[in-house]
Length: 162
Image 1 (cartoon, rainbow, N blue to C red):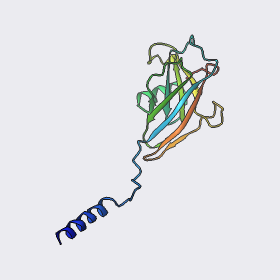
Image 2 (cartoon, rainbow, N blue to C red; image 1 turned 90 degrees about the vertical axis):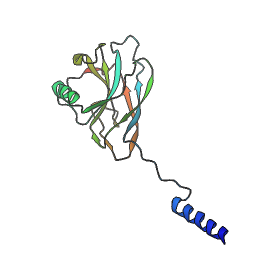
Image 3 (spheres, one colour; image 1 turned 120 degrees about the vertical axis):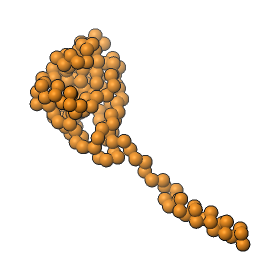
Image 4 (tube, rainbow, N blue to C red; image 1 turned 30 degrees about the vertical axis):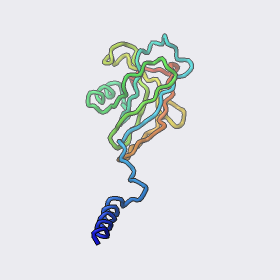
C-alpha cells in the first residue's frame, strides 16, 4: 500500500513539473540585432579610417547637429570597436523593442572618438543595395533580428553631415 502511495505521489509530481512534455518552453531572447560588416575589396589597410563601429539610430538624423544631439541623449547604440582591416566582422547589439530607422557602419578618421568632424558613413543596412535607402528594422519583445549585413566601402565614405 505504501508503494502505491509513493508511486502515485511521484507520478503526480512528474505531471505537475512536466506539463510541456519533451518540448521545453522557448527561452526568452534578449531583443536586438545580429549581423556582419563586410568590407569591400577596395578597402585598404592604409585607409584614412582608423576605427569602425556599427551605429543604430532610432531616427535618421536630419543633420550633423541632430546626430550629435542624438549621441549625447544616448539615442544611438554602438558596437564595440572594430579594427578596419579584416574582410568581415560579426556584431551583436542588444536593443530595446522598437523600430530603428538607420543601422550604419561608421568610420572614424582620427584616434579621437569624440572628433565628430572625422566621422564618416561607410555603409548602411539596406535591402535594396542602395546606401541612400536604409531599411528600418523593427525589434519585437523577446526577439532578435539576424542577418543585418552591411557592405562597407571607402567608395561612399562620406562625412556624417546628413
